[in-house]
Length: 112
Image (cartoon, helix red, strand yellow):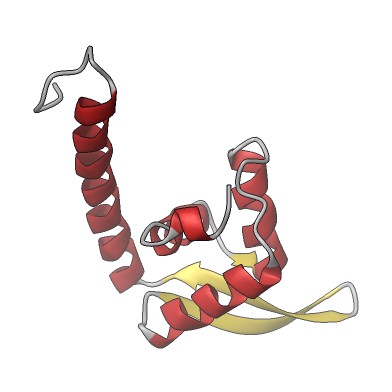
């Protein structure tokens, strides 16, 4: 899927990945790819600006570390990020149920 298809959902997806524990930027990219069976194989040019935006918003905290002689920035959720993830999850569930009601003839609205 393209980055364009993810508009409005990328931040929540990154927060969900970081809920499992701290990750560096490539780890976020790899987790998104792995956890979606390759459907979201997003480039650095999509992920790193989102990480920086989330950090500026106080939703994640980034720290520099040295790993195998390489300097990397590792990101983790803040308390505000955990709260936002809860909001994002509820919003996604409502959105998915509404779209499902329109596209799937067998699901009534509201979804139960």
